Image (cartoon, rainbow, N blue to C red):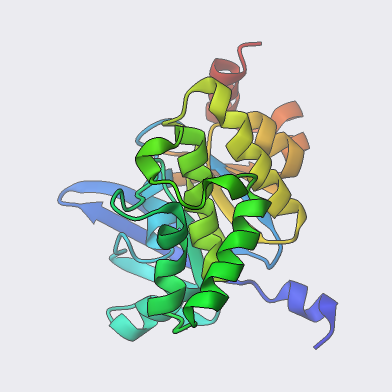
Length: 252
């Protein structure tokens, strides 16, 4: 298969995805294709469905209608499919979700040893390389509670990468961080984007979007209102809701 024809095969396909919580219609017919090596930034007001949507991509949230296919596998009630997709998608959340009683090294090597069945020394070697990559090689033997929020989030990214996923999902990865720590996490995400990782990120960090997004997707009230390149979105948004939201967050 040539590079070009691979590019045209989407790695994520969502078709008319709906999600309800009781009577609340959280996702209203989301259709979206993501291509390998593409960096997608999803943004929008709170309650717009963006976090719900990204969590449907590895079935942390179940959709009730429509189809979601990730890396050729349809997300359905079949647990094996869900497990297979979770092997291929790394996820980083707002909260770091590290195990407090395990060292940084143990946090990162746990899944590769248990799920990928790697020998401990292989897992530790990969973990060491990833800690270098996220800029905190000296923290391997510390516990999460001894690290800053920015360091913990970088450990969480390394932990997700240790499973060698094809896709990285980020759900507002910097929103729980103090301002001075946001850049160190975004720098890692920028490096990942430039290395060719497929990324879907829910974030309001517009500098990150401007620097590396191939496409920005504006969510509001459970729908995709508008999408385009960062240049289109920042300089020529078409929809009034997009214009209003951007004016509020960019403080022109």
